[in-house]
Amino acid sequence: MAVKTAPQSHEQASDPSSLVIRFGPDEPLKLEAGIDLAPFQIAYQTYGELNDAHSNAVLVCHALTGDQHVANTHPVTGKPGWWDALIGPGKIVDTNRFFVICTNVVGGCLGSTGPASTNPSTGRPYGLDLPVITIRDMVRAQAMVIDHLGIDRLFCVIGGSMGGMQVLEWAASYPERVFSALPIATGARHTSQNIAFHEVGRQAVMADPEWCAGRYLEAGKRPEKGLAVARMAAHITYLSEAALHRKFGRNLQDRERLTFGFDADFQIESYLRHQGMTFVDRFDANSYLYMTRAMDYFDLAADHGGRLAEAFRGTTTRFCLISFTSDWLFPTEESRRVVHALNAAGASVSFVEIETDKGHDAFLLDEPEFHGAVRGFITAAARDRGILEA
Image (cartoon, rainbow, N blue to C red; front, side):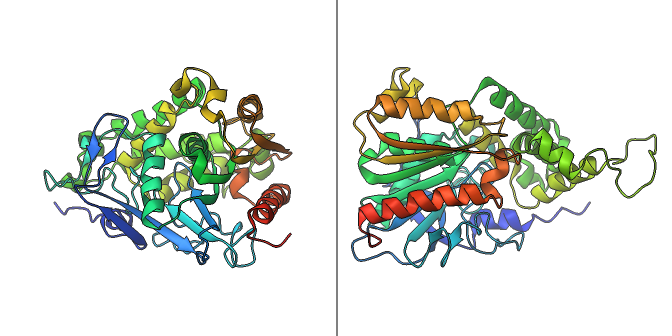
């Protein structure tokens, strides 16, 4: 029987179409699991130029299914970068003025050490032998990259969803290294409902016979069906009921009447199936397990004696939190909780709630009010930092 060819996404895991920093056995990443990960590598992209003062660096943190290709053509899909509307020459985060860095998080699947990477002690893909990764581990690895690039203090750290969790962790763990922070559509912890949705997705992956207890790469197999179902379930949480109704309603897919079967009668069914199948071409199933687990474990208050304000005590970082009215994955109350904690810690903080029916994914879409809020905060902070003229 012919062995299936690994998709390009798996090739990217070991030989990414981006910059790579390799850390040797003498530079381990100390994981929260109590294990030193070494050697390891981080894949990343940069845009723009670092100024002489090294004061214009912006770190972009990607979400669960994102990667380092934030503002360039994606090497697997051929599509524009996932935040191409926000980042680039003359755009909101203007790469004519700012030096933008985006890393693929550790545990990812597009060049940073993850479950598809080769375990140097066995010569085989890590699979589930890779230790569980946390948000703090991701940020610690990013800090090592920033050190390697010779940057002492970041002008801004920005990200949405899981990226927003990284922003909050940066501000808590390295306050002296973050001038400004933009956590978007996120929270300081994962709720039980969000953990529940992630568990459904993980179980879908692991129930696929081709998952092979995480050893599918060695077996020449791919748990496509399980990962596609996981993506379908998760994608529903990124949207709002109003947006789904506006876009799809109960419209039928390429037919005039119901088939009284289990084909995709409705447009929404066809849409979700498409989302699932295109996702498996660019993402590794085991990385999906690791990324969702990292989000589940995130609880910033628990890391500071149960008091969220203590995570930010004495910080000089200036913050702008942004939420969306129709986001039920990370509702506004989660952002308000962080704002209250920042106020209690005496931090400089502003908060914007964007009225939209586009749901959680609004931060990735064309949302003028959101773009305006980001532009306003970045511009004001850059003037105070001396990057832009007052």
